[in-house]
Image (cartoon, rainbow over all chains, first blue to last red; front, side, top):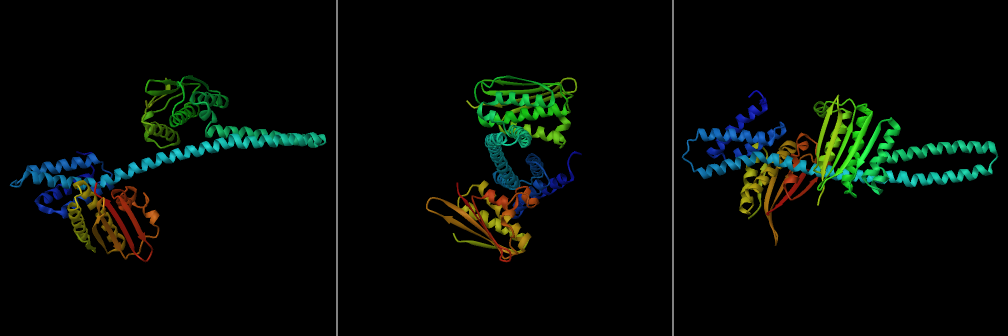
Length: 312
Length: 132
């Protein structure tokens, strides 16, 4: 019983008292107390099952000291009325959380669309404009004396750097490959880029057996991206592997590395930057009704296993 | 069935408002679950009056349209009013709000929700629920 908080102990006492008075004909006044007790339970952070346990305890007590000459059906109805009154505040929070969840899901989709738009603008519009500037400068350089022409060449060198930066930024935001060619080509491109930057060898293999719904392609791409960032940045891995397998009703994706691993349990309760990435992975998987398994040890590195169900 | 007015001045008035609301809901044929949710909404509205305006009233009446029937609950006070209605309706505005209780909670329990409030001229919250 030591696990019971003071708030819960207090609640048990007041709840049992109020129920007793309600059964003695307390009417609306005791129903209102039931509601207020439920409201306080919500505010104290108790769960709906905690309250159910409180009710069960109070109900059992009222059965024991029943001076019962009353009608059993009436008593059962009165108890039911009292119970749902105290559950009503939980109904409100339940509805509000469900609403908030749906809103977050929509917001995420809007943000992803917005990211896509910006990435494509950077990739297509901005680089096209830069190409036009390049050509104009080259023309200009050919008509100028050589010392001025050389300075134009310098400027063109800076333009090349800007163009490369814009492309990188665009790919980091959202690779056009993902929209144009699908998950595997995008993952291969992602792996190449990371290998180039970090020197970590990454193998991408498997098949999606055709295109997947955009929401799943996006989620898997982001999950692998996060997994590979973890592998190279935190796990100090030398090698990593991405495997995509299409099942009859699901798509599976594994990200493995030979890094130093991490404490999965501890990281999930800790709110640092690293665990935020894992939280994001878990949320993406949950949003698609999928399953996530993380195995990690210092000896065998880290393994991220994601399964997402596919609709028929 | 006429409208019922319950003045809200002290805590015990909340019980009277709930009782009247529940009785009217039962008369109109609402289920026990919905009657409980209506009583809950009345609780939150009346609590707001006592908390922020000190006094006001709750008015309840039946809604009879050709194809459907329901209940309307109006909570009115001449208190200081709400400076920022949009904010008061957001989650996280207050402790109650972050749990979804308070005015945002009332909004979720009822089918229609309207609020009219200006600083200095009180607050009127009108909520409706239709019988399913």
